[in-house]
Image 1 (cartoon, rainbow, N blue to C red):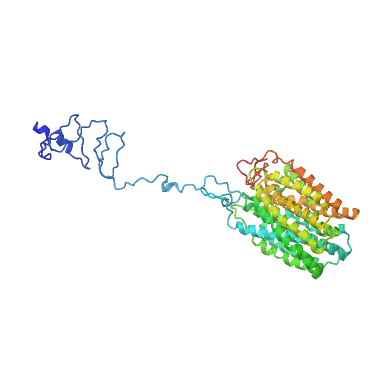
Image 2: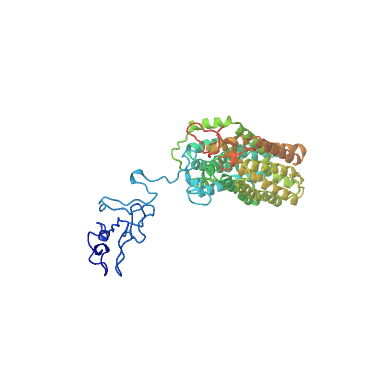
Length: 557
């Protein structure tokens, strides 16, 4: 009994061979070896109680405390593990969860990045980085490109509208009728649009920056030479052909560059760019009549030439977009243009704006003459044109902002604004006083301005973003026929009828006819996610190395 019970007084004189002695024997690492018998003796009186009994397969006793560093054992593991020896010297603690061995390389940072194709901008312009909320950010230099394109649109549109204010003095100086003088205002528009494919091809070959700077120099040179004209033919060649061609080399590359820098917000960015036309129109509306009264039409053309030379500096802001592996050249341009000419939706889209442009520019070219016809003087006529230009910019920004809403496809926005523009143009002859003409001209300016950004953003909905620059240039070439014939035709109707009533009614009919063609586009009634980040029509399939930048839902034709 004495050997089995262990002695009192704190448990001295324990027999080594007793079960209690075996229970107090410790292993190499200091872990107490549990008693294997089912009945363990306990101490006597005030002696320290013996450890509780434990059988193999049952959980360890609750009083068991593991050594420091081993952690508490799980209840389902049973007996705590027994270490056989010290850890080896080469043992490395486990890596934290998510780390990869060094020989596997760094983990990918963006698993859903789009492929870097020649026509796709880098991921910086497509949206925020993974895990970051907020609107998409443009690539570096995008805001400078937007500012440069804004200045270019302001100077180009300002020069075109300023020529419309000079038609009466020019016709009076050379004894030309309204129809002949109108060619001075429509020829630059036709050259601007007819030179669109040339501007897109040259910007693809040499870059947008040098082409835009060369175009700014040509436009200023054309206006400068027009100041020394001695015949109407000289004005057709200098102001009409040379200045208009220079504007084409500026306008098309700048819009194409902005469309590539801001693919997710293309409609809004285009609206901000073309709203520069309202700033210049608002400034030049009162200024050009003052220049004509002070310096005559020759001095006014010289000052307009000095203003147009600033396009050289604005073109320098078109920073090239770095796209890896892009080696553009003329051999790749021809197949892209030929495929556009064989695409039915694009042809219908271009023909729609041939009809639209046949009536669109009539109020801008003949608006001042209409103001004089209803009894306005030079000052009030300039205010009518300035008001039309001012609200024009508001319409461009408003339409671009509304087009970014995902509720309605962009082509439906374009159709609605084109119909409103045609209806207001039909009502324009009702303005027989300064107040009435001012109100109707302001309404027309707002609706007409809303059409512009949606027209250029709609190109990407029809053909995809991959051939945006080529499509804009080709569309402007088709448009040139409408803008070339529309204002002279309105002037001829005025000469035949004696007033501008029939001229404005015919212009409104052209606009409504063009808007009806938009209904035939495939993306109008059943829309898909287009290239511009909005719902639109199917995009053009790629050929060769020139791959369009399409979204995941955008089918190829």
